[in-house]
Amino acid sequence: MNGMLDAGRTLATETGEKITVERLYGSGGQGEVYRVRTPHGPRALKWYYPQLAETLQRRILESLIDRRWSDDRFLWPQAIVTDPHSKQPGFGYLMDVRPSRFHDLPALFRRDKAVSATTLRTLVTVALHIVEAYRTLHSKGIAYRDINWGNIFFDPATGDVLVCDNDNAVVEGETTTVAGTMDFMAPELVRGDRGARPGIQTDLHSLAVLLFLLLMNHHPFEGARALRIRCMDEAAKRRLFGTDPVFIYDPDDTSNRPDPGEQTTVVETWNVLPQILRSLFIKTFTVGLREPSRRVRETQWRDALSKVLDAVTVCGGCGKQNLAEPGGPPPDCWSCGRRVELPVRLRITVRRGGFSTTRDITLAPQARVYAHHLVDDPDRHDFTAVVGEVTEHARQRGRFGLTNRTDRAWTMRRPDGSAQAVPPGRTVGLKPGLLLELGGGAEAVFYD
Image (cartoon, rainbow, N blue to C red; front, side, top):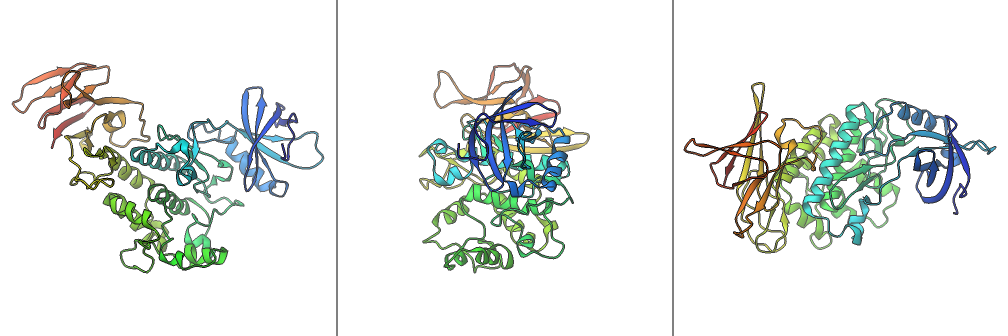
């Protein structure tokens, strides 16, 4: 297999379970990953290079495994594996096998055929799931330390994500051997500022870089200055990302604006990005560079991405999806340039204990209302929990309504005060002014 471990080799977990090596998956900066056979079925094994199989790394793994954390968005370490027949020290760890439906983020930039059908809605969904995954990790007091586009895999059909290489995550404040990947590292880490250590605050910078790359297909600091660099060596990267980082759309410093002739993609994508997201990028890549405590938090990204996702609409001229400013005017289509006609929208109000929150959903064809729309502070957006769905009339083409996909009736109230039940499976027309009582303290009204 041309790897450190031969096919058929027998290894063992610390509890004595036998592990049989089947084949090499691939290699990375820290070690090699193999498919192995275990008493509980196939698993993946990451085996460290000898020079990296250190006591500190083993302690980090033991700490992560002891947490016994189960989250389907993470390939979490499950057990330490050693070779009882070898005289050379070495170890690795077991994790679940990555399902084939997940692809790496760089596949988007390589324009791989497998991800070519990824839509704008799916990209925003991927960004939202990434933010929520790291929010969950951080809420447990764990810093990932090396957020970059090589550690995230996504399903181009659903937007589901999978976080890999979790063996570098440590409890906030603990020591680790990994500081990050320079392109994604916070400037204070790149510079090596006194007292600067990888942690949750530096993760927030890396997360913002990852989101920018995902949505803009470009690095936030690689503008005109990067084009003037003849050799992008380590010294050049330190200047670009650490010593003198300038956001390409810093409103007060235009020295690093992207070149409109050479860097057309980021110019075009930034121009159609909703202002709610542009404002967050500007904040985290300007004041956030100087004051780490003011970097955009995961909940801010989550709320903004969720609103943008609910505002996705389709151009009636060319059929392309467009990102609209939540609650704002109709955008010009990024593809054909026509003004996009906004359909009827739904404003959901959720009341809990004297407080209320509102959400606006653009009711484009096939748009859906989900269970997370009916709670004021969702921990996780679940796009399988459908509450309502925009459907087309079976006999009248072009006429749409909102179909009840729950197992209980809604109550529809007309402007004149009359009411009517909307049982499961029945549809209510998208008429401005109609009010729906959805249950659980949630109600919604249709509006233009």
